[in-house]
Length: 443
Image (cartoon, rainbow, N blue to C red; front, top):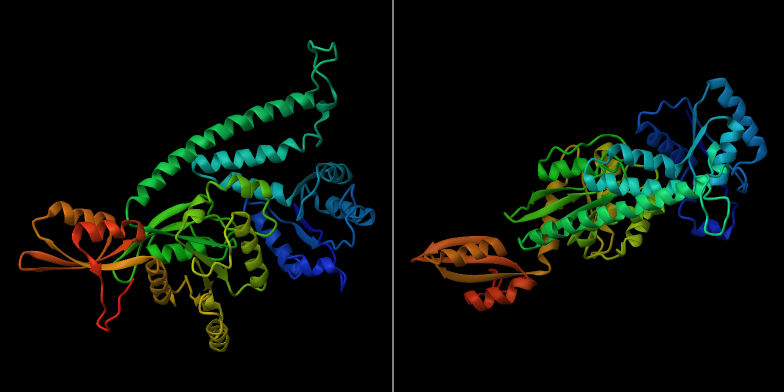
């Protein structure tokens, strides 16, 4: 197969170029990403080329001359599949297949194929099938030779009956309805699981970022888990949750989610909204960036775009921490330069330089996670009878126990509680705000 990057040229001074988030992305990097997507499902890439276009042709996307030029390339390599790194309309896809006498797949179709291959959980498989059917429903005109025929039947108006294309659309519509019902049931189960976790005083930290930014490697480093982490686009699809141990003995839940990508199909954002509920409900979001990538800035904008589509403000500094990953790929001088850039960032938008591969910077990141999670929690001191087993057990279940010492038959405890439990702890255990040695209250 071959990969073609039909990237739109932007003329200098074109106002659209100033607002197009992909205008600054290098064509070579975009093509390399498209090749990576193809290889992610074990396709053999015989060739890859960019095909700059100054204007999109409604019938074939590419101009007539470029279409004919690619015919010779396809014939010379005996190509069976062409991947176009763009979103094609059904008509454009059909016309290119006729002109090249081979199967054509656009970016949306390719990503759907990858997701279909990678989805492991029931919910993931249902979401992918739903997105795929919504995509196919608009493409029933593609090379289906039987669609121009009509099936016999008795019409209420005495017409010729239901056409095959109408029947196919009806069948797809019925399947979509069944899938949506099944997904709602799975979502209800997930809500029950999430409600169960919320009764335990563990905060949720979610990893987001561009695909292949190193989220799964960082996830494994932070939780000592063994989640698949490969140098491959969309290596992780289904969300994974593991316990995260914080420096002072506290616990949180860390969630690894699907990676984002430029031009992520709209139907996939909608379909995986339920899967990404862990991000929506998270107390803290870690935006993991591959700071060594040549298009790191463009990738950041792509992730911010998807976050906004999910209803999350990427500029919400108190809830989002940026993690600049893969600093092990830089020499000492480059690292110092990155540290200087990071030091000049506003205090409310800090970033942390780490290497998930080597472990560099992980300690500082964990401390920042703990500090940020503690902002909305209050630290309280209390004294409880050692014989009050029920009360001690309740505290362990509903608060983060920072210290516990036995004195004269009583436990002197320091606990950190969520604001929803704060008044209960104060009233039930006569707790008071914790005072540091400096004489200030702590939250």
